[in-house]
Length: 67
Image 1 (cartoon, helix red, strand yellow):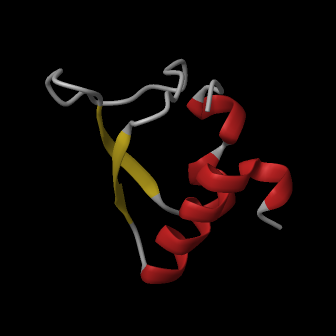
Image 2 (cartoon, rainbow, N blue to C red):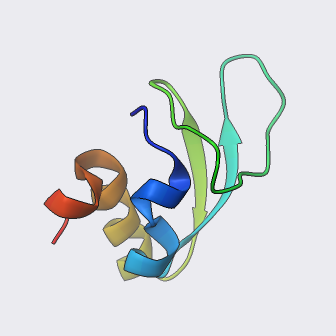
């Protein structure tokens, strides 16, 4: 948490795409690389099962811990 999507580099490292971020009671937002992930965010991911699993690891552990 507290890192931008660009810092996490989820798409390039996993092959998955983050489609939407749901945050609290706010409407869904289409993410950009500048968006900072916050605790409680819910993400909609698209990709193959392997790509989505890789993205989940990156989001949980950071790009360094997912390898």
